[in-house]
Amino acid sequence: MFLKNMNTFHTRITDLLDAAGIPYRWLMHGEPVFTVEAAARQRGVLIEEMVKSILWRDRRGHYVMACVPGAARVDPKAVQAALGFGWRRLHFASAEEILAVTGCVQGAVTSIGLPDDVPVLFDEAIGRLARCNISSGDPRAGLELAAADLVRIARGRFAKIVEKEP
Image (cartoon, rainbow, N blue to C red; front, side, top):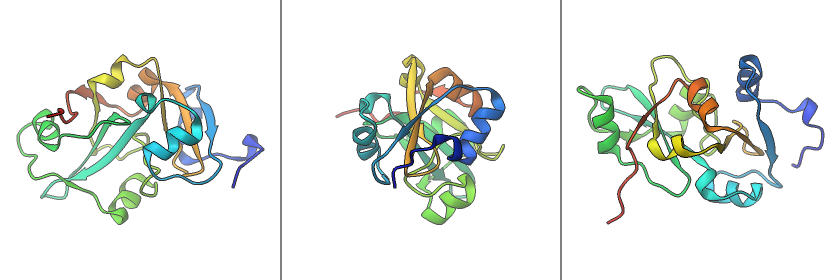
């Protein structure tokens, strides 16, 4: 469903951005999307401007959010190394875990508004972006905002976490 009146559309993510005074721009989709590729097409933006947020769980049940540029893949060993001692055997979180931890459905996840005990890692490439695109928490829309604002509100830090090309 394409929403025409943005004054009545909001998500938990936009509520958090509004409360922090962070400016953003809505990017509506013509239909719900659940992949970064489909979202970039719907929004008419470069995939390099997209931030892909992936929730991981370790063997002890701890979670971490790893954020990389849209076309990149997360290197779980690099995430483990960035987190330090004690993080082992990272696995993708299940759809149920994603909803429980982030409040968002799988495919519409963002790094904003996570519990305090969930660290957020951004690949260093995101730090070189002026603006970026993220999910709004709703598969019908995305958000564009300053990359520095995203990292700040997500309480994230930078690390090299992109899987290297062979």
